[in-house]
Amino acid sequence: MTTRIERRFAALKAEGRAALVTFTMSGDPDYATSLELAKALPKAGADLIELGMPFTDPMADGVAIQAAGLRALKGGQTLIKTLAMVRDFRKDNNDTPIVLMGYYNPIYIYGVDKFLVDAKAAGVDGLIVVDLPPEEDVELCLPALKAGLNFIRLATPTTDDKRLPAVLNNTSGFVYYVSIAGITGAAAPDATKVGAAVARIKRHTQLPVAVGFGVRNAESARAIAAGADGVVVGSALIDVLRANLDADGKAGPNLVKAVTDLVSDIAQGVRSAAKVAAK
Image 1 (cartoon, one colour):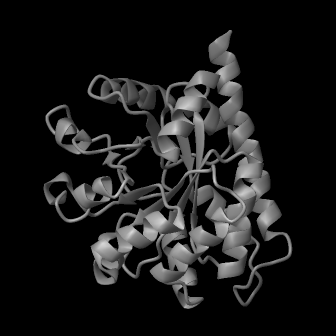
Image 2 (cartoon, one colour):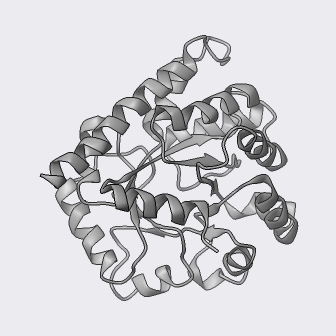
């Protein structure tokens, strides 16, 4: 049986365009605002949604996403509440794929078996757990696949052809290519290098390849979308969210609209790449 993620990428491939994947932190700056934003993202052009699972020690994340996680934790967000958010999202939207992204520690504390049952029941489609290498597949990856969830792995510019098969083994849904070495929200990616990297990964797998890290606007999204199956944007959205918090860190009245306006703009960039490629 196919997952929502697999069906969505297949549908977009038939349309001849890349997916727009958005990342926001669940519970940032509070549960209600975070849920409202998640519900608004598909209408703004998001094809897949990544929800961050806030964690106290997010070692792969840049300043913006670290701060988002800390705001969420301060607001009382937990893994239980993140799963509740997915359930609330699913009341109105049964089509948009949802991927939970974060670190293993909160899942381990929750209990892997219980987490997988609860995540599947809530309507989660896939997991990205950045600190579990392929050598640890027995911990979470294999049980997740058995539970019917996609397990999405990261490949980076330093993942050479010798390492790549291990990274791709047991990966499903899509491959997340980190376009630059380093943390999230860093320098802008070079579209030419990204295109070559995506082509190299595709020589090893039939899975779609989505590219993230450094995409900040419609122009950079368009350039990446021309050579990838998906474009992931996260830090740029969180920067806009942060700019719409008041002095006390509470959500301002225009927060959701400000973030979704940027998503709409980036979505147009992604979609225009397909038009260029189709000529």
